[in-house]
Every structure is written in structure tokens, then in C-alpha cells.
Length: 435
Image (cartoon, rainbow, N blue to C red):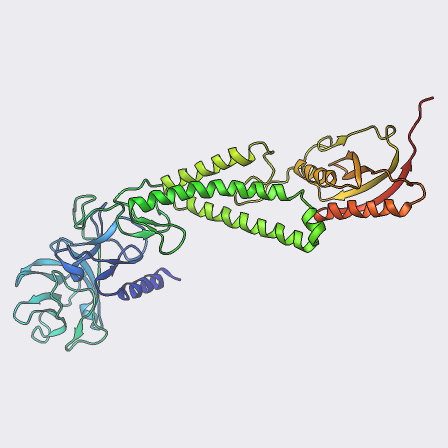
């Protein structure tokens, strides 16, 4: 959208606010009944600068419905009668209310338009001084301290009826002063502070905590949410640990099938990532207290569940761990010399997909749980080579099918934890006897 189209859309949204409210700081805000000027006389003004807030950017979280100083008020009028459109400013009090006159451009030969309160007929009138004997072009019977923004009616003027947009008036209102009662926050709802991290106070907007309806507009709600942030951070570290604990456990897949195991793994992944992104969204509220509570929960959870694991073992809340490639010597297990101390079937495999020390640990644990594997002779991260000794059988030399079934069990176990297997070979080695 162009800047002009966006401004037009924002004005249309402003006009859709229900009675008793007005569009202020990107939302319809209820106008306090304590304001002496009422909802028709209230203007969206910054309590920080004392100036009228624009309909669009820039953002100012201190914008609230406020009674303006009518003497300094400046507004723009757009109407069907082109001669009445323009900027108006205060000219003095007439009939008990401030009258406003059009500011003509330098060199303009036109007649100035006026907006005045008619005390006899109890209405606001807009006319062009000296045009048709000051005949009223538009009028409004709304009894307000300032001309109403909308709701004008046509008398002899051309449609559409006037629309008023209040401009920066330069009102020197005391910073932070408001006409409504102060609370835990200023009553404006937002899901994130626009200007960076903020401490909770009565001058900043109220946080909407993740979901509509969870509005932290009271102290007990806010601090309950802070405790919830600690619990969310703690539980996220538990979910990370639960995923790690489930990786080497292939008994579920052996018992219920490969699909059931994958479904469980995917469910844990989905829950962990979703929970991680919710925690990230809490940090993005830019609330200092909620951010520190979340970090405290993460730290406690890490100390309880994950402090002993390597730094690359999927320990980040919302993003996968980095698969850092290690030197060739890392991840190599030498249990026994390959040329001695072994008697029985020795199987070699090429394991694909190992990229880090955590992968090596996963493969080692998956094989340790297998009854078919007597010991791991070699596991090399760099080459992917895996050498294992299978359990001895009563008639190993004559029953080759037993060894083949063991090979199948090893391959299934590796595939079930996410790795590919190729280059399978099987040899039978007699034990060396000392002479």
C-alpha cells in the first residue's frame, strides 16, 4: 500500500470504533467517563509529548484519549465543498465555545471558511465567510467542547460531509499527565513494546500474553505470567532432554514397528519446536520481567536436565543444533585390537549420516542395547566404518543363517535411529592361541 492508501485505510478503521470509544494508537480505546470533554471532545494525545498523535506511524505507546486545550487545537477538514477543505486553527471564544477559522495559503484570494458554535440553535456550523450571506454549508448537533470529527450533516454544501483530522497542536500538556485513573499499566493493549525493553509501569501498554484474552492489566496477572514463564523455560529444557533420551531407545520400534517409532519421534519434535517458539515469542514482548523470568526457567531446566550433555546435542530452544564436523580422530572407539582377542563372527558396516559426536553416541547406544552384538570393535566418525563382533552361537561355523539374522538386526537398529547402512560384510575369525 502507498502511504496515502494506508492513511485512508487507517481513517476508515478509526470511523468504525463503537460509541464511547475512539481510534487511538492503532486500536479503538474506550474514552473514560471522567473526561470532562466526553468522547466527542476527546483527542488522541501523547502523555509524553503533549501533542496530538497521528493516525498512523510513528508509534507512541503513551497515546490516550485526552481533553485538548481548545485554544491551541489545529485540525484538517476534508469536505465536498472544496473551499471548506484545509487547516483550521482557533480564533477566539464565541457563544461560550472556541471558534475556528481556515488558514488560507499565502497569496490565496479565496474567502476563509469558519467553524462556530451557534448558541441559539445548539449546533456546530461550517460556512464560508462572505459566501451566500454566510449560509451554513454543513452542521452538527453534537454538543461537544470541540467540533466533532464525524457525524456532520449537509445543509447546502456538496457531499461528502466534512471529516476532521486533528493535527499536532503544540499543546504543552505536562508530560505523563492524564485525566483517567492510573493502574498497573495504561490500559492500551499490545503484544510487544514497540520501542524496546520496558519495565512494567502505569505509563506503558498492557501486555497480551500470547493469546487473545490473556491481558496482563493487573499486577497479580502479570506476576502469575512471570511464574508461568519460569515454568515454560524449565519444561522446554525437559522436552529437549526427553528427545535425547528417546533417540537410543529402539525397543518401541522393534515392538510396535518402525512407523510407530517415527510417529513418536515426530511428535516429540513437533511439541519441542512449538514450545520453543512460544518461549521465543515471550522474549519478543520486550518486557524486562517476562524476559528475565523465561531466562531463569531455561537456566534452571538446563542445570537440572542438560548440564552434562555436549553443547551440540540439540540444546537450543527453537533451532536445531549445529552439526559441527569433528576431526577424524574424534568419535573413534577401539575396544579390542582387531587382530586379536576376537573369536567368532565379525561384521563390517558403512554407516551414513553421522556428522557429529552426538551421532556417534547415538549409534553406540543403539548397538549396546542389542542382544545380537557382543562388542563394538571400531566406530569411526570420519569414514563411517563400523566393526562389531556378533554374539557367539553354539554352532557358528555350520549355521550361517544365524549370523545373517544378526546382521539384519544390526541394520534395522541403525536405520531406526535415522542412519543408512551399506557395505555389509561378514567374516569368521578363529581365536589365536599362544604357542
